[in-house]
Amino acid sequence: VLDALYMDEMVTSIRNWMKSPASSGVGTEEPENICDSLKNVYILIVEGFLLYNYEPLNELWNRRYFLTLPYEECKRRRSTRVYQPADTPGYFDGHVWPMYLKYKNELEENASMQVDYLDGTKSQEELLSYVYSDIIQELNKLRE
Image (cartoon, rainbow, N blue to C red; front, side, top):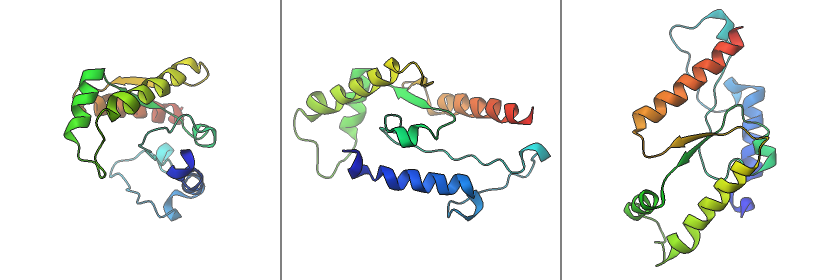
């Protein structure tokens, strides 16, 4: 399954970005106000699923966030999305939800991996505020 997601190519792309963010092909923005100690600090946010159980990728992350949802809310959200091809009847209960639980349990059992579990029922603003504050704390550590 992981091969179908082109994980090796993702690892290569991220490593290339880490070597040279400006020439990696990923757009970068220079903030207007930046202190000298953070001039050459770049932030790459990678969003997706199954990112933390693929070891070559997993060793690259500084921070990890995992959105959690209760069954009913997850099923409701999934039912409002349009997939091509469409989910077959019973697909959510037979595959999607069990795989979510399996993946989440694997993460929770891996004591060496620090993951911030975020309540996916909170507003987008609350979630972004938390992640933003967390990243700012990480940047402040670099200043020291």
